[in-house]
Image (cartoon, rainbow, N blue to C red):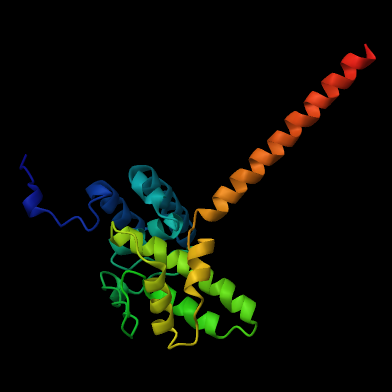
Amino acid sequence: MSLEYNTEREDVILKEYGRNIQNLVKHVQKIEDKETRDKQAATMTDLMKQINLAVKDNPEYDQKVWDDLYIMADFDLDVESPFPMPEKSAIGKKPKRLAYKEGDIRFRHYGRNIQFMIQKAIEMEKPEDKEDAVIYIGKLMKSFYASWNKDNIDEAVLIKNIEDLSKGLLTIDVDKVKEGQLFNSRLRERKSGKEEITRRGGSNKRRNQNQNRNRRRN
């Protein structure tokens, strides 16, 4: 009895399934009866799912096992499949490189989306809508700046940046922003907190009034 070494065997095409699965695929290829071949191929895909559990992490794992079956058959397998046979030329082909968006970012610490939002704000017709947009953009810019720098940024600098990015079409009064703390993203949270305290205080007051009323009745 002569020993057969792996170095003398045919290479395993998909190592995640192993040599035995690859040999079974060759067996399915040799089945002459079309109906039997179809059933055996479907059984093979179920077996492949059990062997390679990682394939279930793929959202299209059903098609993945059928593609793998065709690959192990060297794209020479005539069976009924719920998915078309993949193109041999597409296997191992590198995806196209994504093109970067053209155009420079004026202030990188704010990002490209800020420039996009400023452009949308410019297109608004109502002055009050534009001001609301500027306040919202200013809050975002202040939070983005804080993630890059430890020092606090002056609101006047933010307003100047907005003016530069909008080419002078958007602005807001500096004193109004500072006095009202309009660029402070936590301002709304403090107001909500105050409303919650007021609501709870009113509930306690009504509860005390009901208790006093019940004592007088008794």
